[in-house]
Image (cartoon, rainbow, N blue to C red; front, side, top):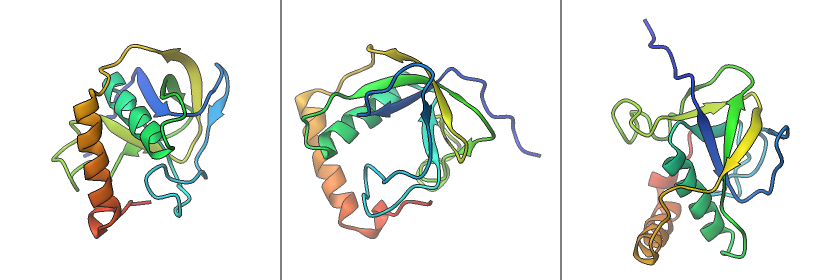
Length: 140
C-alpha cells in the first residue's frame, strides 16, 4: 500500500522570471545537466529546499540572474523525486516531488535560508564533482 503524498504548500526554485497564473512545464533542459531534456517538473514542500535549488540554478547560469522561489500548485499526479528519494536519502526527507503535469504559479516568496559565500563555494565544489562523475546521473 502506498502512502499518500502531501497536500502542500509546494515551492519551485528557478531563475525564470514568472508571473502568477503561468505554468511551469516539463520538457526544458536540466539546470544540472543541460544536455538532458527533462521529462518532469520538480518541486518541494520545503521553501528552503526550493531556495537552494534556485541559488544553485543561478550559480550554474553564471550568477548574472536572480534566484526565485515560487509557490506552485500541481495540476496533475506527482510522485516522490527518485533522484533524492531512496537513491540518496531513505524515505523523502527533502519532501521533493516531480510531475509530468504542469505546475501553476500561485505566488512568489522572497524569504528563505540564503547560502553564505562559504556554503556557495562548497556547492560549487560538490557540483563540479557530481557533474564530472556518474554520481550526477539524473533519473529522468
